[in-house]
Amino acid sequence: MPMRTARTAWNGTLENGSGQVELSSSKVGTFDVSFPKRAADDAGGTTSPEELIAAAHSSCYAMQLSAFIAEAGGTPQSLDVTADVTLGPDEANGGFAITSIALTVRGEVEGLDAAGFEAAAQKAKEGCPVSKALAGTTITLDAGLE
Image 1: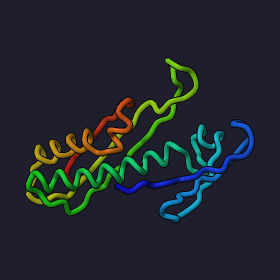
Image 2 (image 1 turned 90 degrees about the vertical axis):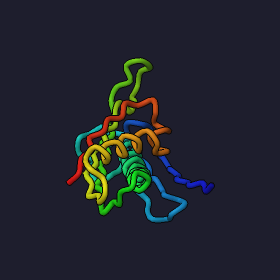
Image 3 (image 1 turned 90 degrees about the horizontal axis):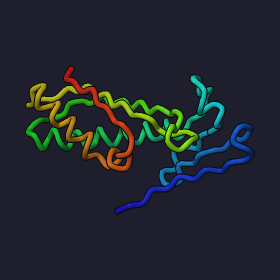
């Protein structure tokens, strides 16, 4: 199986430093990162590990869900998946932790009713490789047909 690589160059302290994340394998971009902006409500044009995890989770989940819909006899026409990743205090160990991930999916699917879609959606939540990698985090799901 393939391996994918990202690289970060960081300069300075946590509070005053900044860096750039390069998506090395795909070469599609380099993105600024900064802890003060990571911890702020407005990211101000920078990304964060949480946003990158949200991108990974939403895309992985959409792929896995499309497979499980087909496995259940349906045909996905469109899936709109959002992953909201929350950074908060790590009460047990100090510092910070990803405290929760909320997946929301709305789908247009032929051949499955709402119950069938919900079953495939729940199965995808458990079966997507990114969900498995984040198994220590609370992951919730809101799934529905459009």
